[in-house]
Length: 140
Image 1 (cartoon, one colour):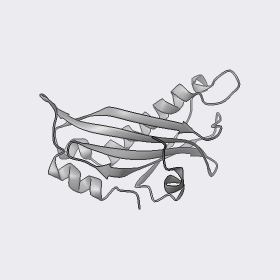
Image 2 (image 1 turned 135 degrees about the horizontal axis):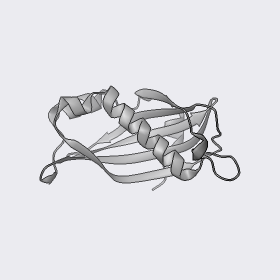
Image 3 (image 1 turned 180 degrees about the vertical axis):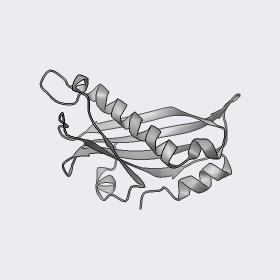
């Protein structure tokens, strides 16, 4: 499945987080490497979950069920990386978020990640309080 880049290029994300790359994130030619970008997207999602208070709204865990990354251009050290994030879809036990990572007004990577709610017995329905909150965080 390809990411709908045109939709994400329009913006309308619920949150933006600035993440500073580390020198250890570089590949041998000086770019932020693809593994580091996956980690930067993960950091953006964790900040999103804290900022939106999902964890404090209901006692559930979230796990990644699927993720797609597409690389569109160079991200370079030491410039700050702007990670945008918003909700694309909400299902019964999961929701899908879209993310971009860019620098200096240009997007270098795109991500779509499916998160699944879990309790002690495994996958579970999204709590109503999460569903209500997630609706407010959808891409415009």
